[in-house]
Structure formats: structure tokens, C-alpha cells
Image (cartoon, rainbow, N blue to C red; front, side):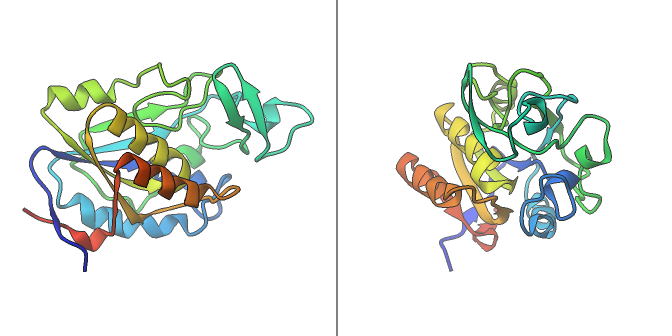
Amino acid sequence: MATPIAVKPSDVLVVVDVQYDFCPGGRLAVPDGDAVVDPINRLAQLFANVVLTQDWHPAGHLSFASSHPGRAPFETIAMPYGPQVLWPDHCVQETPGANFHFALDIPHAVLVVRKGFRKEIDSYSAFYENDQTTSTGLAGYLRERGLARVFLAGLAFDFCVRYSAEDAAREGFGVVVIEDACRGIDLEGSVAATRESFAARGIACVTADAVVAA
């Protein structure tokens, strides 16, 4: 068993995008995506501080393949802020697919960070939109509350969890990714690339059983 990591009062669990459209049957289903719900519910009981993120796109968002005639989902195009994967329409505001999974049970969550609501830019990270300069305000929120280490779980490991973890590290937070409480899309080797990126940045990847009460 891995060395236990005791949860401290200055830790926060960030639960990334556990929404219907990312679960089986959804418009951008992550394989086995709903399997993260039970471990996340158990993990959340260890944390006094929990933040949820929610993909929250307007209809016609420019990350949707349907907004680019002649383009197909999962193609990559150049956008002013860099390469952009084109996705199936998903997590459109006020639609059932944008809702949190019904079994997600974290009544003590203190904040929901909605992202991707600006039509012209995508937003994978809980901290920054994909231009890497437009902040969600989460870093400031955590600092104001004296929270220093970010644990991440949710969907998808190789996109929104990855970008959130990298940005948390860039902002100077300690970062722990609970990999078995995540699932990946694995687009052109993106899961392996995520693990390599985490290793290069010193971002810890652990299993849920390594995270224990103080």
C-alpha cells in the first residue's frame, strides 16, 4: 500500500465535472465515467473543504464541432489562444446533461466553479480558461481561506483534471491527483501524456486508499 496521505484542515478536494454528459449515455461520455461517483463521495467525507466544478457552455460554444461547418468531433483546430479539440455539443447551460450526477452526494461542498461559459474560449481548468490568463478566481478563493494543498478527482483525467492540476501547481499549491477517482478519455495517447506531465511537474498521483483522515 502507498504511503498514507493524511488530510489536513488546509487541504481542499476539487471535484471536477461529474456531470451527466461526461457519464455513460451522455453527449461526451468518458468511458466508465460514473464509476468515479462512489469513491468521490467517500473521499469527500474526509475533507472539510470541497469545491465542485461544472462545465457550463452556452449553446453554439466555439469548442463544439457543430459550430465549425465541415469539422467533426475530436478534430483539432487553431484558435487565437492555441490548439482546440472540437467536442460534441455537451454540458449546455440549463440542459439535463449539464447537471451533476444524481448520486454525487457532497452536501458540505462550499463552492461551485462554473467554467466554459464564455462562448469564444474553452475552459478545461478549474483555475484558468484555455488562454492561461483569464482566471476563474479559484486560486484567490483558496488563498483567502488558507487552503494550501489541492486534491483532485473527477472527469476527465487527461483534460479537465490535468489542466486543473497543472494550474494549481503553477499557482504554488501542493497538488495530489487521486487517479482511481478519475477516468480518462485517452485521445491520441492523452492519458500517458498526462502521467508524464505530472511526473515532470512533481504532481503526486495516488489511489484513494492512500488518502486518510488525519
